[in-house]
Length: 175
Image 1 (cartoon, rainbow, N blue to C red):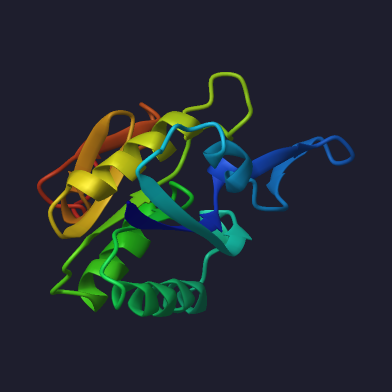
Image 2 (image 1 turned 45 degrees about the vertical axis):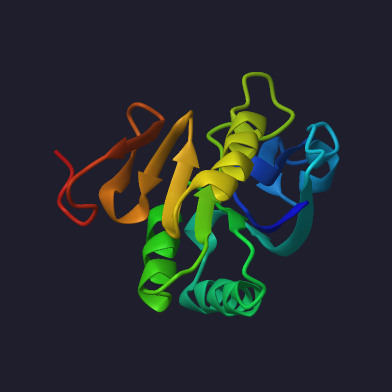
């Protein structure tokens, strides 16, 4: 049985619709409800919610909290999947890559363009693919969305296409 740590920071993946306010917002973690839908007979998923924020609201202190928890879990030698909002996912991934230059396991970041439970959500697909990538990828920091795996240092979000794309330089100006 392979252990995989699943850390949640919120993002669109975990948003819910607020009838009172008429908006989608981060309120409570809901990943456990969706993990129960997956067939993972030889995987031990240890899920933990670190925070439940839109990634545009993430601060440097939040990234330090993520880094510190990842550091604690790395001692166990198991891969880590981190759910994260897509707007600043690359920024957090680069921070983790810089913080851990000699990883011995893959660290996978994933999220969604449409919340879990909404019609047309990509969340369950991305979560499932991330759990598989955590088992198959070489050590490093990756972004997994929409059937693709990207090294964090060579990807960026393409807002017009609502996905991520490979690039030679993720800090280069957008075309």
